[in-house]
Length: 179
Length: 100
Image (cartoon, rainbow over all chains, first blue to last red; front, side, top):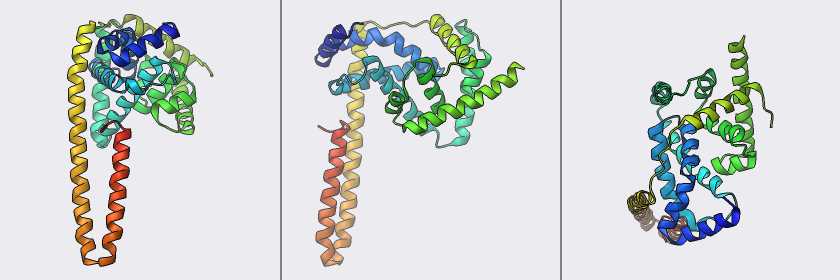
């Protein structure tokens, strides 16, 4: 969407719920795809998308064009997801079990949609939720470290080191598997 | 940004997932309906959180006062500290959008 057209739509959406609905519709697929990659779970992606939509609507008057609208939406979705996972993390045993269950569910869901569960997916899924989020934002969506730092509310140095060590670990495992 | 073999393969996998993933975009009416019900729930949740916060603040303040009445000079100090704390916390809550 062109920037000026987009800002007109955003200004309209700030005052009118229907206009917000139309605006959000344009980003629906983009956001769903992002959340699916992040959660690797359709139900969770849908729930988060709905929560993101509500948060976005409530906070839209605070949107000051400091980033793209899509980036702003992604930041809301990312924080919601990470906060949710941090709450769950309190019980580490439960967390481990959930991860295994989620992995099985992810495989099943991908197979249902004619998508392959590749070795890359397996390696990606073995990472912690936070690291997965950082790698996805940095290497698939191409965000800068500063942008990711703002989106995830983590320090720039933390973002950089987590991505570095996770990629190092993955590269080692990937080269072992490739041999 | 360094693009190695693993990242390239992973990106290809995600692009493939994006292509195959079926997304049903809801109608504007449905979105509006979801917003309306979600907005109500969100405001209710925020109200509950604010109520919990006020109750906690009152309990803490009562405790402070209870302690302070037994130590005369501490009464005024504790009163001022409590008022400042409540004022700061209300500002924080306002910043979070929980109160207007």
